[in-house]
Amino acid sequence: MITADQVEFSAIRAQGPGGQNVNKVSSAVHLRFDIGASVLPEHIKERLLALRDQRITKDGVVVLKAQQSRSQEANKEDALRRLQELIDSVAVLPPVRRATRPTRSAQRKRLDGKARDGERKQLRGKVSF
Image (cartoon, helix red, strand yellow):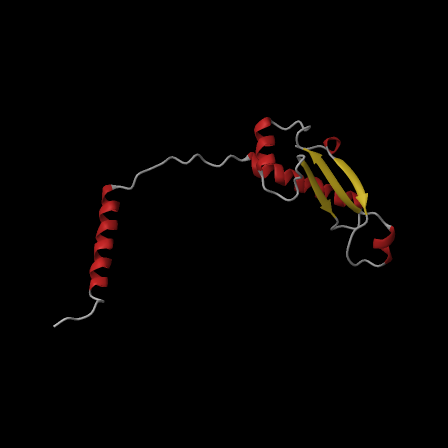
């Protein structure tokens, strides 16, 4: 679980419609999380850095922008939740694939199908008398 002391928040002005409130209140939040300096296990750090995600910089810093809410606190919670989802997505290891071979009957079916297709295509040629 990521805590607020492992991330750096900076308040910025939100974009989009909202009247004067948008122009005078810094309610949007930029979250910065340094993967290398974090307390995450090494295998999760490696998988995070291997992600081809535009939110992760070349220096290994995750940058998230949250501006859905008019409340800065709600935007901080939203950014932390999204960061946790990103970390959880790489924490689950994909199942190990074991190489298998097709069964004899599957090979036979495949070759029979190929022979049938070849016979059908033979009939498409010119008719000779």
